[in-house]
Image 1: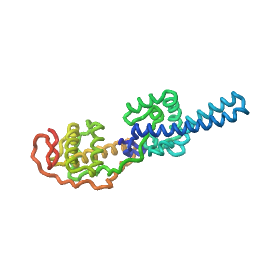
Image 2 (image 1 turned 45 degrees about the vertical axis):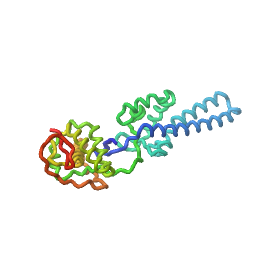
Image 3 (image 1 turned 90 degrees about the vertical axis):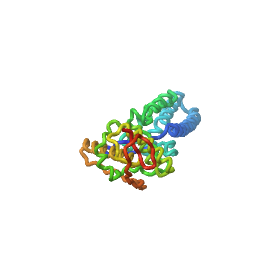
Image 4 (image 1 turned 90 degrees about the horizontal axis):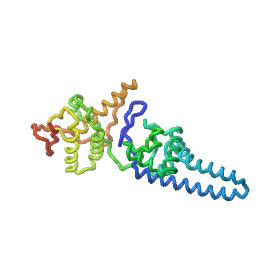
Length: 287
């Protein structure tokens, strides 16, 4: 998962398409393209008996370019970011701001795809996708697009509603040192919380909360469970991002979406200060 910022200063979470899925979608598209090229070649071969040789060669080159470049451009423009391969696997190309792919962007991707996949065997696309945080190939970098997955396993929305007992504490947090990777791990944990066994819920929660507490200060009140600590930090981080983006664009901050599945009830439990440890009662961050 990653965040994209729309033109209305709204932060939207999207699922980035994984490299194996994109590769399979590409194979489907290439199979369609080369099957079409084979059919066109057979047709031109039949017509070549009545055509000048130079004209037949020109037609073959024109149809080759049309199929290899025009196919992805036309399909992605008309279907708002989906070729046949992407449609089959639930993928879509969107702009970096989360908006639909435009013709100019589809054209950039189509032209670069001709170079990346047909001329260079896909090596530049593979290297770029492995380096990019969002899995972008060179065509996506030039066009300002990203490929997202519209299908995925059923998940409950992350409980980003601020636990009321922690609201005053969260407002004082120093979050500037919190790495995106740690925040993403916490977000995934909260999304899967209801699918985990109680033992795994607590063990993972303590581990992730301990890691996060190394970058966030001040520490939470005594007896705060891991899920409540992580929820409060992410909710406050999201609120500050929305306020900052709204101020930059001169629009009122958007209200965060509440989870479709209720978060676990939070009941603070008193606990004396002590060394970091995992206990059934709650999470104690390192000093």
